[in-house]
Length: 229
Image (cartoon, rainbow, N blue to C red; front, side):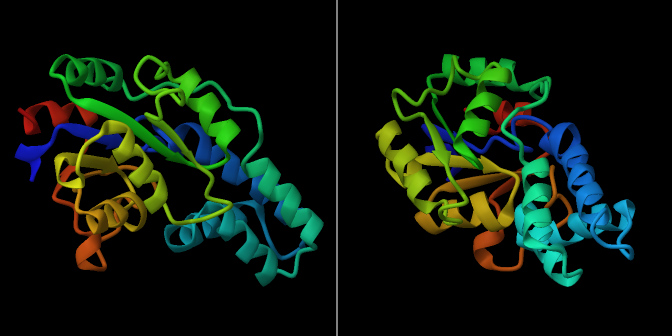
């Protein structure tokens, strides 16, 4: 399938930059501090570690809600923790070192590129700008798709929208992402080729279904250049 690829759809968080290291870990500690302040038996470290564990199967925001339920924490405090985890402002972030040179090389080879990123649209839009990705992905031409996962967890319509913008059949598109349960399974279900970036909260997760089995796994985005003609 890789030989047919003419377009590439990228995920953003933990695919083009180290979201876990630069944003997620500090955010989880902020949320844990707020949750711990509302329950004497919940320490900040326990709240942090339980978020890490729960997020592997439930996602980061849902992990905070589950902790709130388990410890009977008032809804307003849980909401404060959610806002602390996912604030409107975005701290200084940088892409993986090989990302910008790889994108430039792919464009030079005439691959069409798109980006589908999940989260609060305003926050994801700021990330794209801070990471210096605006030269490659734009909302104006639908090569930047902001998937609001608070409205729907299903990424399928966003991937379909990106494929339409690239004007390519699914069989000629490669989807690159870190989450087996999200980008990989969704893209394979549409008939796209898939590459898993081994990073982020699902780094050690094993495929649970045939749809979660990626075609190829990589550790660095620059490895795409040796995989594609």
